[in-house]
Length: 575
Image (cartoon, rainbow, N blue to C red; front, side):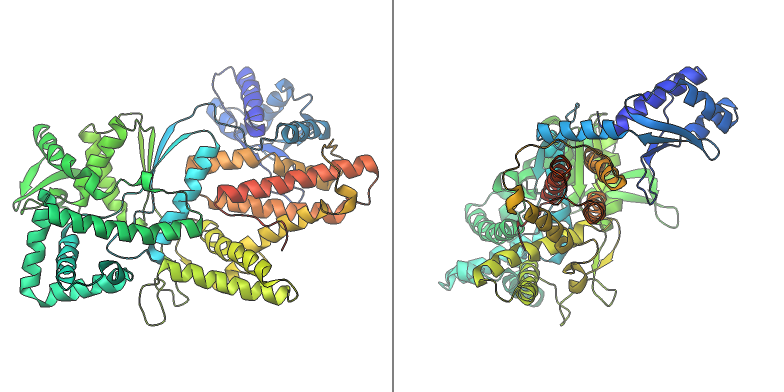
């Protein structure tokens, strides 16, 4: 039970006793004042209103029943009915010493769930580009957090490897094989290969017809088409895995559940929807009409699950995936980290899945939407010529810019060390800039901001961590292996409270799936630490005080490192 939960439980009991009602909870929030001052119970007014009582008088009654001995040094009623809780220094000291002795900064959940996370999902007909960045980075941060809390996490990389465009690509590959050309060399640039095939498809009727025929053959299991398709998939995945390794993304080949995986499950889905009376034929297509979804003129919007030509759609595949994730994977939560433009699609698919009983009632289906990465012109991020930015090119540019920055600050550093630091800083800057933004918001991509050593950025936090670690490289602190923390000064108290909020912050991210909350916590922690360090001498203090403050430094460094690790970001011992 974290600190907030302890206080919540005690105050809930106090209110229940005072009001004579059960399960009446007061909300405990952190007071965001300049002193970072303790806690505030602000649910009193709501309860008083329910009971028809004066909030301040009711607050006095609650105060009389609360027993926070050993936890709070002072309780006071403020405003129209808030209860301010000033935590005791001895309580904070004990909590921190227990934390540092355990070596476990985050408490494991008492109720682990099976969480399926669908993320990254590149289209294998093209190389990964900036449009794949947000879903890949956000999804990977979330799976790290869920795993760290003790949940059972199942990653699902649901990439596009099926459909009409693959008939086009297979036909182009057949011609290249006939011409005795090295296919692997041709596929070194997936974008160029795709454009060549698309140009032929648009301009050559015979090629287009052959492509459509190959789609039918592929879906029917034709050996030659399947072999070419598999060759294309393997080479495409090499491109993806190179990026995953470079970015520190934890997806592996074992996590792949592509569209093709569900191919044999699509016809049974259609038959089942028909049996359950959910299908309606419209212009030859099989549709599910939902009364909750209508167009602007009030006409129902169809969820098309089978086209008039017999082909299946994304909705069909997603329904099969929901069924699989519930029946086979036994999911408690299924999270889809997919951009906001797919919101209507997922709302409709989730509703159909509910009506068709493809998910158990206790399973939560959640679309974790995200906005668009914009250029300085306020439009979706593009190259200067207006083309799509390859993700690999973006990462390489980040590392190059970081190297220039590191070299300017450390001209005498060895080249190998400069490059090692630049590799970490460049990738960290890109990932942290992404994760620090509210995922539902569009944001402007800006190299200068993300590589700045000021503000809520990766370089700022990496430097803060390295600066703390430098303390322990000094001779005076070299042999410290145990700490006895005693909180006395107000800056120590502010830092102590913030350190004890770490578990709760991570739990909140797991609940709401907004990684920017963890970024903000780490940024605030680094700022509070700097105020502590400036006000409270560490290495020049008397031995007992020095040991205590080194303990606070150690906990801060460990928390920053673990927090960044949860975001998929490496740290540096020195910069």
